[in-house]
Image (cartoon, rainbow, N blue to C red):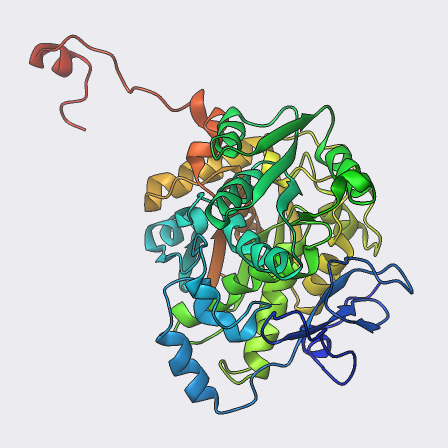
Length: 437
């Protein structure tokens, strides 16, 4: 299975958009396998070959400098990139959470710890409204839900998406009903429920939850439901492109040499690659080689296993890891992740739960960023690949942190607590040996 490049999926010679649907520059859905085009609709699989569908565009063809200036003058959210997204032009004026434009942190102290001599950055998406990158993809899905007349917003989720859907639906005035595995971190369950929508825990893994949602879509009970990561997936997934757009803009409109991306379904990584290709195509950045590195937890690493074995097919696994947000045993975009890692000269690597915790604490200690477990994965993989010589320490490297560590406190709670418990006196403080620290 070979993934087409982003540039090829933006060709617009056939299949014009349905005239009643305004999703800005998006003009059709295109099959990533056979290339067949269909009008914009709430569909996710090609009717001819059952391959995955994605949005295709009429991208801006005018003066790149004018487009660059328009973007820089836009809102400090993902809506500054509306001309490159499947959203109407007036999207910023609608009730939404306005995610994105999160900070890109120059991580000099982390670089020193890891032996990086070039520039090292952390793209910290914990600053989004519900403290994860999922706010980006959900914001796009909400616009598609509005365009297709859905009244209920739903999803299958490993945690972060459920909270993002609940918050975005509340802001947009839509009903929400989200489905999660029964054993999620409590913080993510509470965050999903607090927005007033329905939260349904399913006995089983995320893959069990996802199968249930696919069945629900085909049942009359699912009438009027927009599932962000199922029937709205071609639009939802495009939100991850904004990570690529922001990173390049924040670097002065240049592509980094290396990007380390966490992999659950694999969609985020594939869309970051698509975003980079689109920036090149419209002339906003100079074309250059770049490497994309996929990061997984060892306890759920089907893509890493396939990569190391030289396979093109990703064999499903049963997740067993503290990294719940990446615990997807049958990743839909796994084969495309393999293609991109190989095409860009990147890699796919995994780390143990112990290395995940080390990565979380290392990032917190050096840069003051408290990452959730997926961030521990990307930092851990970067460390591992720098030590093995796979990553170039002299290159400009970006490591992505997708969420806030407050959501995954259990991962570090056992080793993060008071340094000492003392009586309220100077003598007790001195006796504890902390006065000279």
